[in-house]
Amino acid sequence: MNYLKNIKLTNNITLINKPFKKKEYYHFLKTSDLSLVVAEIKKNVFVVVSQKRIPVNKINYEFPSGIIDKGENSISAACREFYEETGYKILVRPKKLFTINCEPGRLTTKIYCYYSNKIIKKKGPEKGIKIHLLSKEKINKLILNEKFNNASHIASFFKVVKVPTK
Image 1 (cartoon, one colour):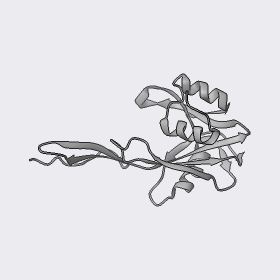
Image 2 (image 1 turned 90 degrees about the vertical axis):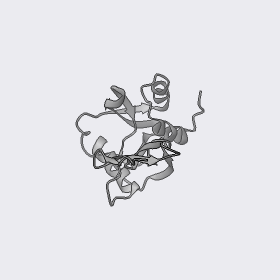
Image 3 (image 1 turned 30 degrees about the vertical axis):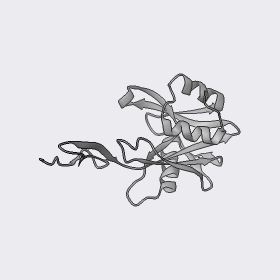
Image 4 (image 1 turned 135 degrees about the horizontal axis):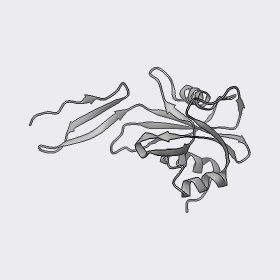
């Protein structure tokens, strides 16, 4: 059997071609881990961002999140990304909700999910990102209308607000 080489696509993404059964390969992406923060600015009002997501070719609503840089821990990345994207600073250590694998069949990515209700506005948002302060009811409507559709973000939201699924 001729072995396929792994292909480094970017600094953060490598296509792994793993021999699987006879004359077959299992293909998956080795990707960076991520952190996200569900933040409540006041009771039942959450900081949400919207931005265009190229793979789905539409504006997507989600919680601030991003790549954990090499040498950085998940909680530092969560706080850094939250501040970079929103301009809000997290004032106390966020509570860890859980760690989740977003697509364990094809991606190695782990997502570290956090919650905070102690934040303060320090500056404007990152270019290309819009900030929304949304109620849990509005977020639920966005989920049902497939405008807030990142599974790990939805799982984190449901964990925080204890909303039953439809």
